[in-house]
Image (cartoon, rainbow, N blue to C red; front, side, top):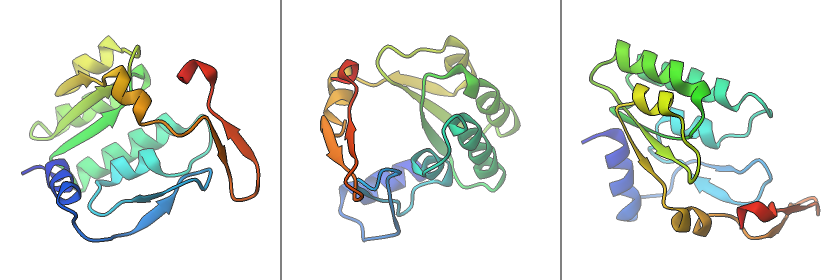
Length: 148
């Protein structure tokens, strides 16, 4: 069973409490028990403009340290094509499955990955935060109107 499948099974069957992080805006706690490090990198706070670099480095590090069998990657960004193709070429037993957000496609990324699927737009919209969220410091964050 893959790392991701074990994680999903554990989460679906109420597997214990583990380490948590707060989102960059301090909005919600996310349980990270058993989540591959490359997935954690996508969730962790990082500086703007370096998301792709952080994800790419962590994906490669996780592959070299044998931390996953199958890595899910939620992205439609072609900037991740090279790290995905490198992991797939150097580690033929490892799989990277791309979950493409609605209306975001990169044919190069799809070709480099082991598999892909498109996230249903309805499911994607239902997984968003509310229209307004207030941070602990009182600052109000607004969801862009185009995301609604």
